[in-house]
Image 1 (cartoon, rainbow, N blue to C red):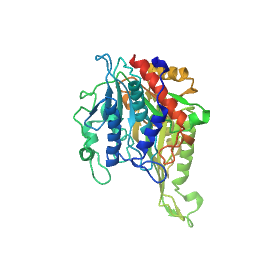
Image 2: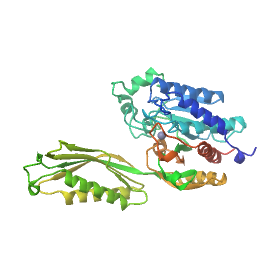
Image 3: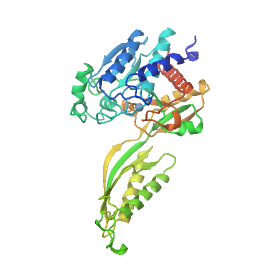
Image 4: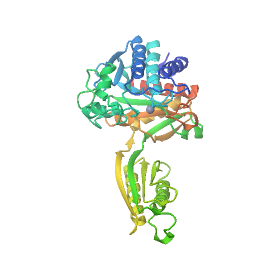
Length: 415
Ligand SMILES: [Zn+2]
């Protein structure tokens, strides 16, 4: 069969997704498979078994990233890679991460079955601890790979029980011999594609099958503290109060307005708020809250940053002060236009409805993109819900995304 007519085996993809979901299955239909636990080991083993059955060569690096390689015809070429992660949140779903790994494996298996050799080698990556639930930082394996932080920093991270990443890797025999970062000699990819459920409501709302992901939003996070003075709610007249909650609520409204000026893709969220002393008849003396700004480009993030600071200056008075501390910055990451075009062409060629979309969440592809041309393929998930046991996706969408991945990888790798 001509490679451009080739289709993945949807039944097999779905049955493997369910097979993998059984490892760490929860009563409510989700998956709890925290990074570098014995369940994670079992999922890795299952993946490695499937990959070995089709002749892939496996390697594990020093942070536990697993790579399954299918040789190409041209040994001088770098790999066209894909993948995602097998760890989940404590109340995670069946598809986040797992889908990208198994869609990649399905691409390789489909080529194996059809006896088609690509020019470039193909690889499926399983990145360690993407979720960041057991160990911080998140996107740990791909972060080490691209040099966002060092291997030593990642290995020293500990979980709430005091177990380090280094210990956890040894316990499940996943501290591999291969260099973990590009700087230390890990191979660079020719290209990296990642298929993923959208984890948001945009595609479902638009009734679109394929999201052609053009990039990921940059992020700036802050801690804000508003300080006034606690006092008795009864004896203190309205005009003589130093109520910290009032300017806090005003600032929260402004944060929404700041994001609304940056549409369609600016985001502003206050997700955490603490009122002190949080007592019915005490005027709040201190309020702490978080701010999460996201934007597709740095200039936009800086506009939001400046607007936040000027709002704070305006709301600060002689009696109530406001301080702000930046805590996290993730640079916006545009994906490679050529790879994005391959995804678009593959979706159009298969007759799937498709639209451009930006990723609001972090993904391994966002880090890999610092070292190689990268792109992502999104499919809708039910009600836009993820990081939840009820996370779900339609079989036809799961199959469609894997077929787009197949054609995009084939086009890049050559036959
Ligand atoms: Zn994920």
